[in-house]
Length: 153
Length: 153
DNA sequence: TATTTGGTTCTTTTTTTACAGAACCAAGAA
DNA sequence: TTCTTGGTTCTGTAAAAAAAGAACCAAATA
Image (cartoon, rainbow over all chains, first blue to last red; front, side, top):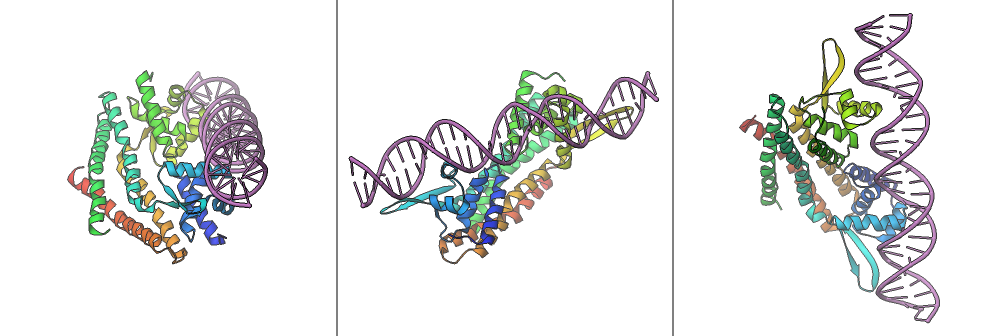
């Protein structure tokens, strides 16, 4: 698509952001490219050209993104190319899942609580407090998402 | 402290959980050890012995955890050793920060919106929707944390 | 049937991460 | 003053992650 310097740099920053979430560099950059691309969709070879990476790397990255349900592709009649685009409709669900994953730490805390001796009363009580907070949080979070859906979308 | 097989295994799982957040393996295991340890605090050499790792690795990991304000240490009179423990009191603040970090993605979306052409109306409108959701979410999240603090702690 | 296209898979290479080991340093203790 | 202790720093290295490259495959085309 002949990206401007500004676009390239934005793609890089979006890439780094996703690296921090544990994604591999190219995966993040592909997300960036799809966001920035004027057509909002890209083909396999466009990625290879625009990001200057190998076919194998692109193949793996795209399959990963599909497995994670972050992208989908469609095809056009008489054209064997796949046109990939982001599944942005489900981003709020994605966000909810992501936050819920963080709260899975509660499982460990509870296990620690039952496993620990009674010795350190204050520490144990801190752990219980946080566990209780997570119970509260896990209950409230979905309500928050619903609230928005009612008020808006 | 002579850890049981069960404790070791729990430490490993807590370690892996933290690896998924981008921490390096040893850092996660140290957090696990501090959680499981009956004294709720550990010394430098205890970590070296219990986790079977080098002094340099421990030194780096502990300095990292201090820089991130995840641990603190105190000393005992006539004892040069440092006793490290988790700052668990601030875990809910930590969680709030962590979630807020995720929502920083809004900055990129907004930048993408201003940078993109008007061509793909639906895609653009999806982006705006999600950006608006994040505005809502960033406003509501702190209220949720406050709500708990009022109702409980 | 041979060739091109779009993409996959397998192996190799490069790069980065995570840690080990040794030398080192400062503060007490002997 | 020398030695020990608790910890740091620097350099090397093993292992893992990320990507390259080439061979490959299936579908469509010539």
